[in-house]
Amino acid sequence: MLVRLGNRTKDATPQVLAAARRITRDLRDGTGSIRARRALRRIRRLLGADAAGFADLSGTTTWIGPVPDEPVVAALVHDALHSEATQEKSPLIAVPLRIRDELGGALLVSGRVSSAAVREAAALVGHAVERGKLEASADQAAQAELRALRAEISPHFVYNALTVISSLVTSEPDRARELMLDFADYTRYSLAKHGEYTMLAEEFHAIETYLALQKAVLGERLHVQVRVAPEVLAVAVPYLVLEPLVENAIRHGIEPRAGTGTVGVRGEAEGNDCVISVEDDGVGMDPALAAKILAGGESGDSLGLANVDRRLRTVYGPWFGLVVETAPGAGCKVVVRVPRFQPGVMP
Image 1: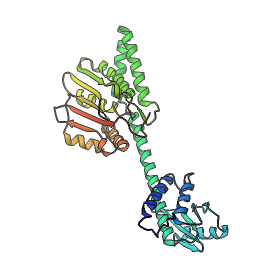
Image 2: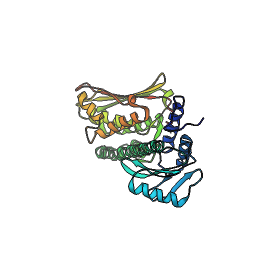
Image 3: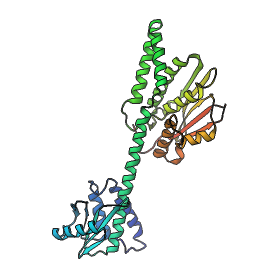
């Protein structure tokens, strides 16, 4: 069945929408990518054209179908790019592509196709490329935040941990060696290059080493409880989502309070979901402040929690962010719920 853009029938609408969705996907990396040729084939078929092509800002063209007379094409492209207006010279049509309100090349069509239909197709191409650029920018921003998170090891914690280890070198050499290995393991996991996802077993191992070091620093002031069900250890999660929650519990919950405090970390399966909680009985905080932190409205120490919340929502959807239960003097509980199996999420 031939479906012509701009001259649709009711029965053709599903095919047009499906074609538009595929064109958008194929143009995610721009009109100069390898998959852009596949998009041109779909555009040619959608319009019922003899040929379809893209021209970049230098005037270089890429075609699917019989290539029209090159001098005519070159002149038409030149006029379209310089005037930023649709140009026609039968049987050719050139429509400038607008991407983020800037000129991004031109869509070229040869055949008995209306200029209105070609302009519709050009608008689709522009939106598809713009969406791809926005997604790429979002990915780059997320990676930048993750790099910042990796580098956010507290100098205060590092100093205290190394001071404790050095104090034990003579009196308890075996204990000092064990803690030094924990410190090396912790920094390796926090700073080394990793993929986007890891297994929950790795995340729990990282927080256990971190808690061992913090327990050495704080001594009897810190009690730790870690419980994880075996069936969730293989669940894939975004890299470095648990350690910031545990660090927040100690730095802002336990350290400011007088006397001893407890940090508990649990991981268990609930149906098709994995539920992880990090809870402390520390000083707590105003719920309004917690909401502001998750929204990114607080700088400095808020980077870790805001980053984790944003990455969870990006990967799993808006209903999978952090849930914080807290009040002044009542401690703090942070709950993470993720699907046990999520397409595309794997270490």
